[in-house]
Length: 414
Ligand SMILES: [Zn+2]
Image (cartoon, rainbow, N blue to C red; front, top):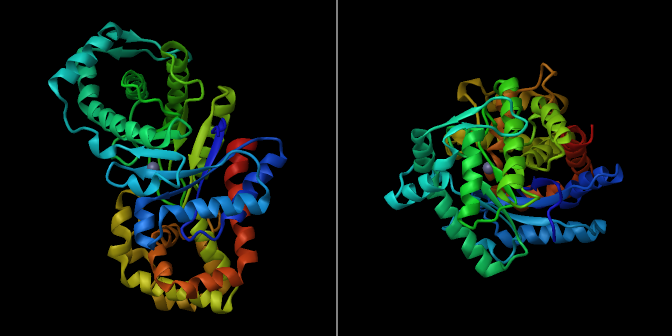
């Protein structure tokens, strides 16, 4: 199976929205564009919800059968490390290797020496086709890059070799470096890709950390021009390493926490079309929020469920938000009390949660907070799942529309 030029990561906390998600991708197919669906769920999510990686495989296979999807599709072991990979090996054919913890933690002298030997000839002004700016490469920059990234690259190789040994060649490999404080510059990306290849790690896609904040479930926060420039330079770096350093033709960029970043979709779209380059966009929690919105809009027991989840979540704020601290901006004081929340009628709850930045009712903090609160729904088990089934129709059409109209269409089609 081959990952297409364009691919889209769909996550689903509770595994009920597989067909509704796939339908959104089918809509794009109906417009003549192929997108490869990739079901992703991380170890962290499995731990919190108490599900196993095999359940994602089942969901993906069921959705594919139900809709008669006959193109490629993948199941992503999302953000795995050597400690967490084992449980994913059977069910996954896409592996996102997370080496964030190995960035910036020193280097062995012999590795530094090899790196300087391999790259010494690049000292001077480096030009990358398509980028007008020249990048000054000197020994101290090379040393800094080596110190920051060689250990991460070696760890990536260790995990990569394990995957290849267990799974053979028919897998997609992604490297993720997005869950760190500092963004990687295009020059760093160049050396990371070149060095991965020299260490015989053949990857299909890479997720760098971009400039600005990619908070969960809400829009991009940062300098739009700076993001666009960096994104375009990253794309051009990838083209450059493919043509001049013989990296795989289909190597591409991944954007993580990609859901809801409406304000950068236009420039992402324009840049990938202008340079005819591929793209993987990973989304996840947005589907769980659509479930909440669907339940709230159903009023009655649906709305009561949302109120009850909120009440419990509010009382466990720290526990729920701590694991997501680097990727949310939520102030406890800014959240409504459960009494206030309960006083809202169905329509108002829907408006508060629906990601429509132009609606004055929309509450970005509340949305981010509920994004982190799925553990509470998981604890309610069948009580929650039964309501998902009861309101399957309205929730399913929310999920499909949200992915198609707000994500896939602006990113890939128009
Ligand atoms: Zn990520």
